[in-house]
Length: 222
Image (cartoon, rainbow, N blue to C red; front, top):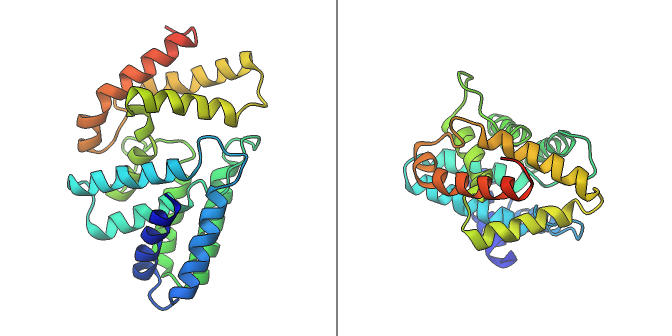
């Protein structure tokens, strides 16, 4: 999986930072993969990264993203959980990852406007919400949906995801974890619309609502 991801990074890095050169693209890609491969991670791993990139590919193929927007969305995917500490205060991981994205992309020579767009996409993943009526772009909507693709995963994958999240938060006592997890999932289940793009709304919502209802029932929430 990591070799395929590195190939994807190299292809996108050439478009984002054509003047940096292959050696710098390779060094950056290796650094990114080391971050995603940290041993304390349970769910926020290269598997999640690969699934998010696949979801973005699906959205691009469905017409939710143009070519340039898809490139930026993939850059967001690479950086959005680059820093991940399950013990961190809410929002800390996303803000740290956004800062790392700015630093890394600037060091490669990526244009400021593109860096700003990637930073905005990383910060969006803090709340996992594109506010109704707020100014947003197809790229931000696609990032939002791709990051939440896992809610609509097939039953076996969703079960594995649940176990990965629990392992990542092994330091949290069972009762506290159940309460916190139920609150998070109830927030998604209570949304009128989980996904923002038309394709994700049509293709992923039914499975997501089924998965959410099943896990909430297991957690003791109606």
